[in-house]
Amino acid sequence: MIAIWMGFLLVWSGLQATTPDSGQALYYVAVEQTLLHARPGEGAYLLLRRREPVRLLERVGTWWRVRTQDGAEGYVVARDLSNVWLRVSKRLRRLFVYRGTRLVRSFPVDLGTNPFSDKRRRGSIANPDDWRTPEGVFYVAAKNARSQYYKALVLNYPTADDALRGLREGLISEAEYRAIVEAEAHFRMPPMHTALGGWIEIHGDGTGQQVTWTQGCVALRNEDLDAIWPLVVVGTPVLIEP
View 1 (tube, rainbow, N blue to C red):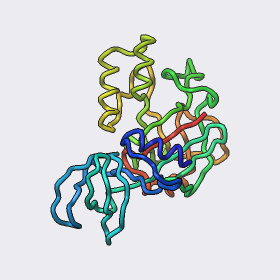
View 2: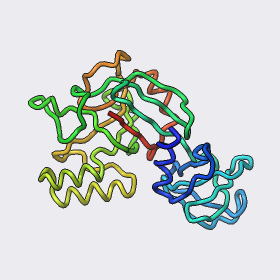
View 3: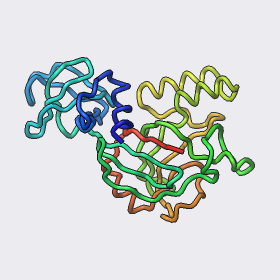
């Protein structure tokens, strides 16, 4: 898992790993924006935005001394940083929760009606084969505490990669393509009503029996979703594997 976690952050940052477990020291900004201070609580001089990666250097009370991707060093409020990410294995039909490279919990999940294929377009009652759980790297674009299915973590499907494919295949317009790319650049929700489909969520009301009934979403038992709910923020990385 160290390779996957460091892949998430090193690709964004250009930081170089120096030790086998250095992935544990890689975190990301878990709020819309935070400030880098010269000293704890004093001398704020740099704005850090959501999902910007930092390397932890030293804990000082409620602050972390960090180094940014540009080499700046300073102090950030500890609660504004996270290293939580989620991995879903469609083959195993389980969701895994990690803190950096360390596995914290795992839970059984239910998947889309067609669990074997990657999502390519919107599904419907007439085309239930397209109710597929998408594969790839996503982020949590929104948290809905009053979902039709108990609670929901909304993922950013369709991604920019999906949009490029959709544009090439004539499924979406240039305007829809640009809107999806722009949303991803700012970790916002993309358009959800194009021919590519949307509203792919990690939601509740799962059976725990690892069955296939959703329209492409990942369904957890309500108590399992409650367990991960406080750990996940807008921007939390999510990997869905075949």
